[in-house]
Image (cartoon, rainbow, N blue to C red; front, side, top):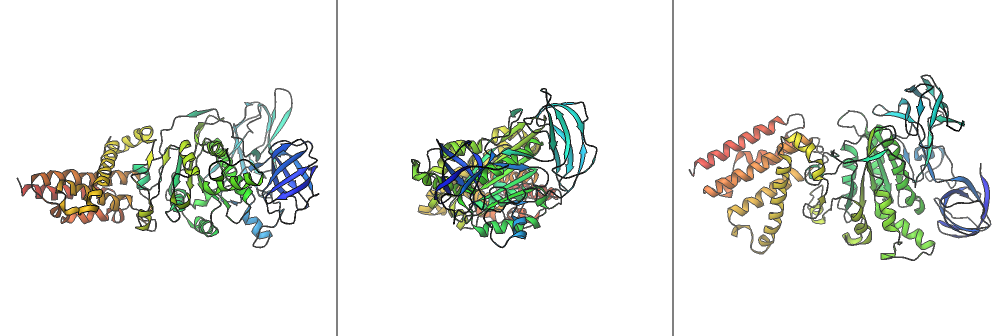
Length: 589
């Protein structure tokens, strides 16, 4: 029930100043004017308030009524979220398109979830049982991939007095009643609301030990991220930030994907909205949209909704984490989100800090990234949220405030290199500037699958790339011919690793996704080329003899020629490499 709590005093873009405000609290959800524009109270001073409006305020005039809903900005959580496209304040864009023209009408209010659709509910709990917040009441097959687990709201506990039998229910139907210790009886429906700026509670945090497998070799092998980890992807315009997040959304082994297009160009979001419904999950053969929630808040949409979109996305992610799923959140891009903070801060005449950003920018970034992690849920399941946030530093300057502050709160950096992007080397992740602090934590997982070799193979590759970076300084001055073959094989092996391993073609059906098992075998072959080649060079062979081997071209083509299902062929290439190197060595014995 809405009630009038004040009047509009003045309008400054998306910020509305109110007078005569009563019975209002910070972060309360309000509706402004005759169109009932959705907004949020962000500042209170006596009977005056500043309201952040999430819609276009054109035509709004002083004296208009301000209505309060008596609750903070919240999202609606329940079956039907997956496969849906929302804007930054969780309005379903496809429904709006069907009911409106090509633009979103001001003040349009549409149900977040379909109220008419019925879901097949199966209870997993009986009357008389004691329950607390977060426990599973029953299950619903939300999509062909995901079983939705209806949860007791986090703030409810007591004894179940009644639970519905298996059958078809709408989201507003009551499926369970819980009697609290005070005697008050609460109703549990198939949906619940939760404030977006308040993290959902968990039983406890768990250590990170399982990698998020992305199928992208440069990520999985050199700069891995754990499930529950945080990553920042800084890069200038055109270096492939959005592309690498698209690849992770398509191929990562997260159960649920929440993709937040925060202030990006409309054509980029259009590509997502067109391509995602057509994609098939490589592990299940089902459409990827069956495990995906898309939040589209493009650069031409209201700036205030852009600021809210990341909170909307992370709250949806927490809801599925609480059901025991591993969720990956793609935030593209947090720079546009920070720019929204800067604009709103300026409208409210707050004191600016570095480059005009508000002084609380680091705090907001920390609040967002710290909602990631591996957790034991209230229902004693394990779930996780991994966050991959891109940053678009102006001019590719990584010393700007958003990049620098974000690096303080994340443990993995995939720095995108413009020279690699210009050379059409994708993913354009710089192996000299990037890092991951998750290597030790997830090493047991990789060691088990590689026969105890993964750490050593990875370290050898990293050492070679570091050496190659130093040698390139000499090569730029005098050319490679002056180097001895013991150093030229470092250059050759590094080039082989870059072109045959790190570079990946997202349009090639074989190369777009690479399993961990294939990655390990490919690394073994390349390291064997270096170690055996170096032995032969010390015996008297030269680099040209090594490059003329027939197996050399087999190694360079193996990422395209060998599928993930026939990786035993890489063992044959490795055997062929050993025989070829042995023949060259015999010439000098």
